[in-house]
Length: 116
Image (tube, rainbow, N blue to C red; front, side, top):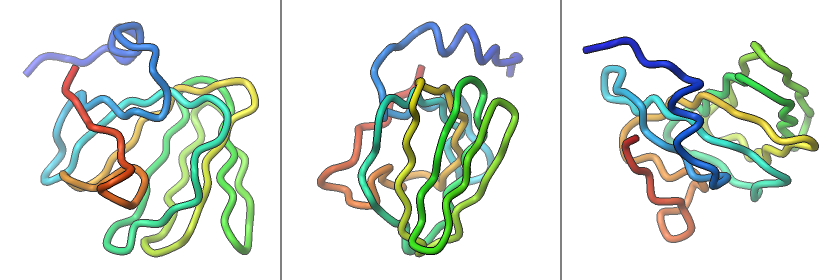
């Protein structure tokens, strides 16, 4: 295992809302994603949703609160809570999810996760 340089990994792709697997942690995927605009409202009934902002800004709307994140900010959406991430200026985000978790909460609409 070698060190993973996040900036180098982020330079390898441009597509948004399509997480790229960069490593594994226990039974979870460690991923990078680029955000642009708004994602859909969704939830994950069986797992929390981990967001760590590397660059840019992210807003996570939930039914009872809205959280604003900047570089270095981390937030975990509890399992089962409906949420909608968005960004005004674009963002790069590190995500951790159990292997096989669809990013949209629905296997039919989820982005296909690939290793980079």
